[in-house]
Image 1 (cartoon, rainbow, N blue to C red):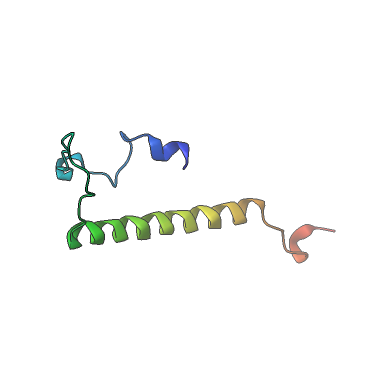
Image 2 (spheres, rainbow, N blue to C red; image 1 turned 120 degrees about the horizontal axis):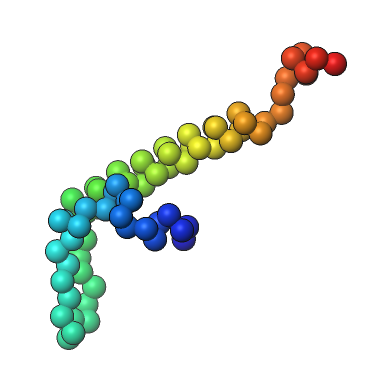
Length: 73
């Protein structure tokens, strides 16, 4: 887990209005996931995967090897 994942204020994927999973003390079963929740999880995963690929492209462009033709040697 990364530090930014712990910060819920900046999380654009979490919607507290849709979080209605209030548990009582005697509840021992896990709550069931609906198809809507699974779909939103898939979309969130795809968005994070896209953001990570863009970040990796920026890092490769910044720290990658330069072309030998444009090195000036």
